[in-house]
Image 1: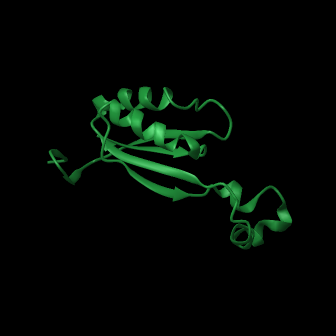
Image 2: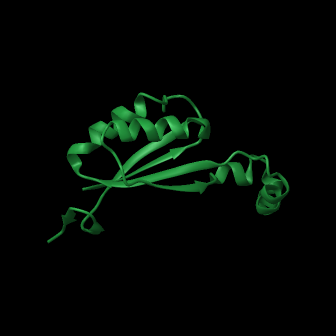
Length: 115
């Protein structure tokens, strides 16, 4: 089992990405609003302590979407294909995709592990 995360900086691709995941048999994902650390603190050393205030007063600041799902190991290539068909993660500030091994799962219909 894998817990797979997609941090999508280019949120205009969210709908297409979700459709591609569904078309490739990936369902049951959770989507959260997120903001990267670099976007909050910026590059200016003097502004680091004002990062939260800057974000509050700059509502046009782009946010990201973090999508995560628990998958059978065998479905990870399908997910990677679905993501790659919509976005090019090799381009800067597009997003990131990574997986983390899961030792057990309960509460997902039909999916049990770690017995």
